[in-house]
Every structure is written in C-alpha cells, then in structure tokens.
Length: 440
Ligand code: UDX
Image: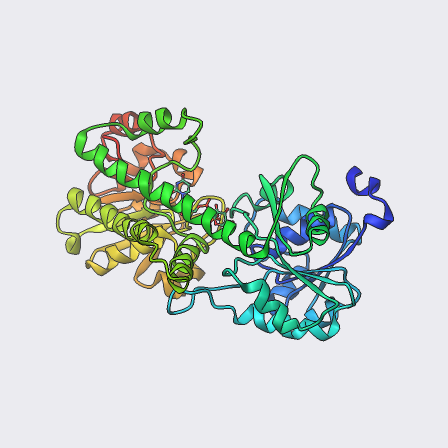
C-alpha cells in the first residue's frame, strides 16, 4: 500500500469503474487504484481482458505494468467483461472508450453512446459519469440525454496523457480539468486523483471539452510552425537547433514541444485537429488557421520524401532503409504514424523499402499499414544494401549503432535524420553524407 492510500480515510475511498482498457483507461485505472480507490476496469474485448487477467499489459507504456500489478496485489483493481455489471454500486464511472475519427472528420461517438446506454439502468442513485475520452463539445449533454436519469450526474474530465509518459502524466498532471454544472461534483471528481500540488480547473462541461481540443490543436500548430521554420532554415542556411534553443528561452514560447521532425501524428493530433475543424464549422466558424496547420503537416511528410529523393536520385530504382515506424519513441503505437506514412509514400514511388523498429517484429509484417514494407530484425538489416537510411522515430537505439558497420553494408553511405537525433559531425566523420531537418 502506498503511504498516500494508507492515509486515505475510508470515507475518501470511493468505488470507481473505468470503462475501456485502452491508452486512457489503463493508466487512469492504475492511478485511481494507487490513490486508494476500489477500481473495476471493464473491458469487453475478450482477448484484451484475458491478457489483463493473466497479468499482461496489452499496450507498451513504461511503468504501466507495475502500476496495474500494484493495484491488483493491493486488491484495489479488478477486471470485468461487462460494464453493466462493473458499474453496480460505483460512485464514479469513467468512460474511456474510443472516439475514432469519422469519415467526415468528426468524432465517432458510437462507443460512448453504446456505453452510456448499457450502464444507465445499472448505475446507483447519485453516481457520477465522467467523460474522459476526447469528445466533441456538447457530449456531456448527449450522454446526459442517453443516461436519462435525474439522480445521475454527467461531467467532462478530459485526459492530457501523452503516450510513452502516460503513467507519469497521470500521477503528476500539469492540471486536472473538470467540466461540471455542479461545482461540488466537479471538485469530488478532481479529488479522486489526489489533487495535492496539482492545479484544478472546475468549469462548465462545454469549456472543459473545448480545453482539450484547443490544447491539442495549439500543440499541433506549434509543431507545424517549427517544421516550416526548419524548412526556411534549410533554404537560408540557418541552424534550427540554435534557433529552437533561443526561441525556447523566451518563457512565453518555451523550449518544449519545439523539435522539428517528420511531421506530427499519433492517435490524437490528427483526429482531434480534424474534429475541431469540424466542430468549428458546425458552430459557424471556418477555422482556416487550423486547416492550414493540418495541410502544413501533410506537406512535411512529402518534404522528407523529397529529401530522400535529393540524395538517391530516382526513387523507383532505389532501396531505402527506414529506422523507426512507431509515431514516436517509447510507444508501440503506429496509428497515424508519420514514419509509416512516409514509408508508404516511398513505397508508392516504386522504391524498395526495408524498415526496423524495436516494437515491430516479422509477425507484424502482415499488418495492413506495413504492406509493401520489408520488416527487418535490426537496424543493420534495414540499412543493408540501401542507397540511404532515414531516421523517422527517435528511438535511443539508433544513437548506439556501430556506424562503421552500417557504412560497410550500405550501397551509399547517406543518412537522412528526420528527427535530428544524430550528431552530424560524427556521422560525417564516419564517411556518411548527413541530411537533417532545418540544419546542415
Ligand atoms: C498528445 C498530447 O500531447 C496529449 O496531451 C494528449 O492527451 C494526446 O495527444 P500523444 O499524441 O501521445 O499526446 O504524443 P505527443 O508526445 O504529443 O506527440 C504527438 C506528435 O508530435 C508525435 O508524432 C510526435 O513525434 C510529435 N512531436 C512531439 C514532434 O514532432 N516534436 C516534438 O517536439 C514533440
């Protein structure tokens, strides 16, 4: 038992259900158990539930296995197939189900609607339903209508977890945001996570839903901005590393989240930026600035492909090595991965593409998103016989490679560093040509 939970009085210990054992539900359930609450995690996918019951964690998230094991060993974390059964007697129910992007760019709320309808008859009087999934403005009203119970509250508490640091982000969030019409209920939800030392914002449901989209859209805009500045630096002969360093010293800008790369991706930014454009349009505002941010990001993928072409010449005759397929380091997630997008665009040119990612093995080669890409067992294999190697995910593994060995097996010693993670002088010392993003 962590000291904190020991100190928690029985009255503060609540019974909480988390619906959905995904990238949001798993860390949330683990943190709520760590805080001393009694947590039931409902997961309807039999294979995912079986893994959890066997003590396995279905996603790669540093620290999550220990957090979940701690909760189970303390008897504060159980898994259940049925959300309807799991919510009985619960004080709070967190909806952490997927809200994928619909064909028209808006969020698909079918999972949220189905979960709300399933649990409604089984909620105890006074229960609080918490929308934690990223949902469009107005979803609290939608869920309230579906649940249709005057003795049940529905609030919004958006998550701000980053994949790869979700456990740390859950245990020490920059802020907890709760959108609730009843302020007392809002504070109760915030207090579940142990609010000591964390800024708590209790606001209206609509505002809480907007905070999530605005935050992600702004972060995406920050990245599209620095990626375009990097392109200008390339033309001007300026150095993006010193530029970012100096920009970041301005406390209004900040140096974090300002690293140029192959473009942004993942399961959130592409979905949330499109959803916000759609939400804005429905509200009568054409969010052209955000549309430009999205279009700029699309161009960044092609900018990296152009860098490869500039090195190897005719791509249709080339063999290209790719280092990294996950959308960022410390995750096995390839959803909307810029690395996969760029690899696929290289395949489309007729190039032969061979790739290595520490989270991708030969058995993954049949995955639809990897069609046409040869999966290699290590970075050396991906470099063998190639006219260029492209770094697309910032795995630390790539900093520890024997560059002499890499050079011996390549057809042409050329590295395109899409993440600016390698040292240009060191790479050139080993006889390679080096191409970075915004730096020579
Ligand atoms: C994001 C938000 O950060 C998080 O708050 C929200 O809850 C979910 O969406 P996530 O998508 O997991 O989190 O990853 P993030 O670390 O934000 O990276 C998003 C994309 O930006 C990745 O493709 C990443 O490689 C890229 N990125 C990030 C950069 O290119 N440069 C940077 O400096 C940081």
